[in-house]
Length: 254
Image (tube, rainbow, N blue to C red; front, side, top):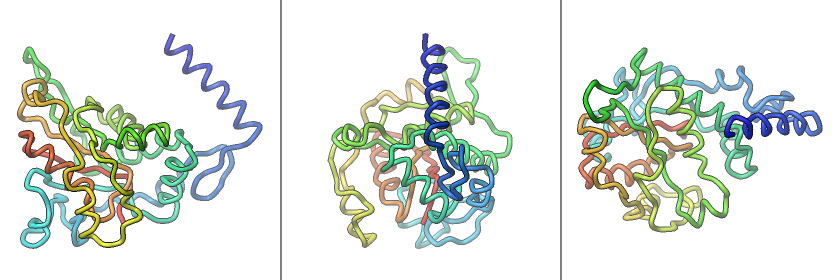
């Protein structure tokens, strides 16, 4: 039944595309979401410290002042490309013009970054009686009011594609947002952005380690990270719940 509904949805999407052609969010090429050329021109293959931008082969934060600004459990943050031009437009159209089909291309671009970093590593269950995954994907949640207003959580849509591409499970409800905060994009200073999100998240699954294994690393997925305030606060919340290894993956940084 699900396959039938998906086929019907695809047919209607193709009909709509003929009537009002979709255009690439970057170059406006017709019958595209984010074309291959724009996606690859946006992609950054190199790895840098999220805080200061210095090139680092591991992607970890630089020791000293950079590391001091980040939660202990958050080991690294990777991003597919800069938050400008095609990526900025694609993320904006996904969120504000409800072009949910863009999540497919953005999720795959993020998975490309994963493989650029980890080569051929894939998440794999062990041969024990309970699943023990290397990675579990967790999308940054929206507050229920915001999600109802928008109609979807863009981070969840991207994370779903990303998780499928890397072969990892995704848990959408381990992290919840309990405070309907002011949008980060409306706040200028780093200090105010950090303050805005203090205490905004909570963990809904206290038995995460017993279910997925204590060796599991959480991959937090979001669409954009500017100062990192959202990832930092979400990581602190997970850290308090006993999670010791968290890696951030965002589509764009800037």
